[in-house]
Image (cartoon, rainbow, N blue to C red; front, side):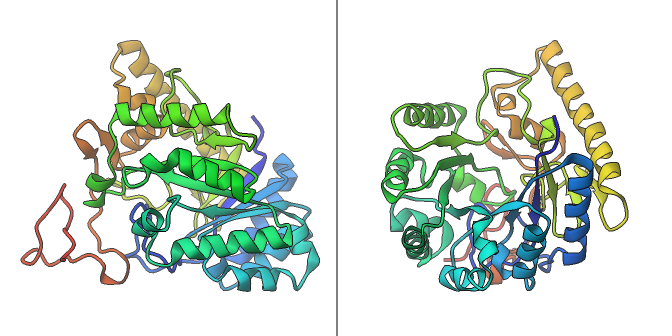
Length: 359
C-alpha cells in the first residue's frame, strides 16, 4: 500500500521515568534536525502524497524547535497529531495559540495514560503524572481541542481496561486505544509480564468494549492474531518512521530498543540517503521478515507467542521478546533515568539478568 503518513520520533528527552519505556536513557538524548524534517516532509509529499504527520518521543514538546516543526508541517499542507505525556500542557497550548493554524490542523492530542486511577497510572509513570493528564483533558474539553487516550497494557494495569475505556468515554475522548507492552530488556519485564492466556483475555475484553461503547475503541497490531501471516501497518508500508538520529526504521516499536549486534531494522540515515532509497531497503527487510514467517508457518514451528506479530518480529531482529518463561532475548545493560537503577553488582541482586533497584 501507499505510505499515508510519517511518524517523526523527534526527541528522546522526557521528564518521566516510565517503567515500560523502550528507549535507552543511558545514551545522551538526541533531537531530530528541523532541516531533515523539512526535507522528509517534502520528499514524502512528492513521492507518496503523504498527508499526515505523527510526532512522538520522548516528550515531543521538549524538542527545542517543537513549534518550528509544527509550522513546517502546517506550511506544507499536512495535518498532525502529537503523542504527549501532558506535562506542562497548558504552556504547550498557549504556544500553539500564537498561530491559529497550528491548532486548526491538529487532528488530536494523544494522551498517554496507563491507569484509570491515580494510584495505578502513577505507579507506571511517576507521582503527579495522572493529575497532569486530567488537567490536559480539562483544557481540551474547555477549548474543544480533539483528544484521544491511549494505554499501554501490562500486569500493572490490565485489570483496569474496562474502567479505563469507560472513563475515556465519559471524558469525551475521541477514541480509546490499547497497546501491548513490549519487553524492555530489564528486570522490570518480570513485573510487567502477562502470559499468552492473560493477553488473550485482555484482547477479549477490548473486543467486547468495541461493541458496547459509542466511542471508538482500538488496539494495536501487536496483539494476538488468529491469522499467522497477519501483516501490520508498517509492513503494509502505510507508515514511515524516522528516529531521532534521522534513520528510517521499521517502526516505533524497534526504535531505540536494545539489539544484539548491528540493528537490522535501521534502513538508512536520511541525512545520507533519499527517502525513496531508504524505503526500498525497508521493503527488502520486510520481504526478509515475511519470508521467515512463511517458512515457520510451512515448517509448523510457530509458537503461540509468534502469533503476536510484534513478538515474532522482535525475536527475529534479535531484540527482547516475550516467552512462556518471561522475557527472552538481549538484555539492556544500562541504568535508568537519573540513577533510578543501581549498577553496582556488589550492592544489587540480579533479576532476569538485569540490576535490581535498591530499596
